[in-house]
Image (cartoon, rainbow over all chains, first blue to last red; front, side):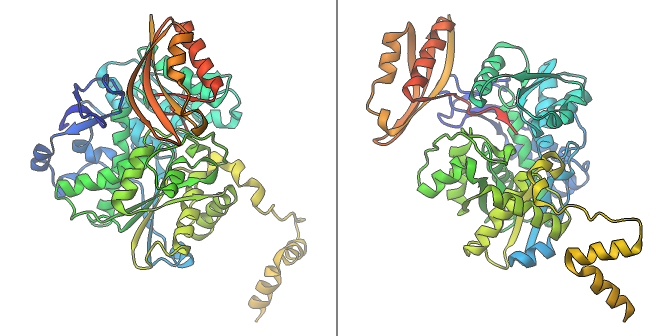
Length: 420
Length: 80
């Protein structure tokens, strides 16, 4: 059951009923779900959660939904001890939260399953979003599962290959001519005009809560304890803020001890308004025009940037921005060391983590969790040029061994090893 | 009548210009400020505009041409 009681403005604290609304009528501040934590504490236990399904819905009591979930089994993704990567970086207790393992291969399934469930509760017939990738995939998939119409807005210059992951589920795809800002404005106006559940507009207070489950899962998978340090990719800043909120809630509910986690956030240098503000020591985010290969993080005017800065200050975490070259290196390092092929946001996190270690901002013995939020097959173009081409050989052993020898000398060595 | 909720972000060089006053004077648009944070070197204002939809459009285009960034109040909604 849900323990929600109201929506509340994050700025002026006015309360509103649990409706499909997202900004305060008075100050235009963002609205957030309010829970009755006392009642929740009475109803929840570690054992009850552990008996739940292996998805985000094992935490249903902590989410703002009443109805039957629109469920394609988002969440409860692996938390892997990263021994080889940890050794390379100089961290003894590094873990990877691998959200590539979600049904549409990114963490967006966590937020969309909540938004779709809430949309159905509210009686909406259409699920909508504006997206260049992961969000569109997830909205289209969940709408299909729920039997809802889906309408997905994409920039008209989006590569055809990126459309397939959404189009396959049968949504109405609308390619909008115009700049990124124009697409943003159009979709904002459409969300106000049509009776759709626009997942990150009128569903946003509920949608965003889905990200808390990353915090819950990591704590549960570590044996009901919060990590010492999290490193999280930041786009709007919502994911980062909600992981922190998830950990805080578990402590408030006495499911874990007090939280001492440092929350560090990583962005690509070509779109780093939150990290820039953190570096400048100001709470004011200056919007930027994104220019980076990390498209899934390319939000120039982050809705939750201000709140992300608050979490960074409160938790004692750090901001870090990495170049596009480092993004590619990070993807390759993760793949080679741990066998996980992440999309560009994962490259941002791994290279950001490397930078923080080199700057002495993480202790060797800290329990560190790096959040890998999406799978690499979605952004293959980012790494294609950095990879070695295959060896071309004739169908003979001699040709194979010659080619292998020419590449690196490895073939000769292996042959010699076997002979000895 | 239409209404639109927007956020203006001002660069340092435009902080001293009465852009919102001029918007209301040059166009048939009522401006209603709800939240703001302005200092000597930068500033943002969240406000509601009320008027004919086309007049609001023209007014916002004029503000943007001045060099002020105009965004929806909820931030960017096109996500990756």
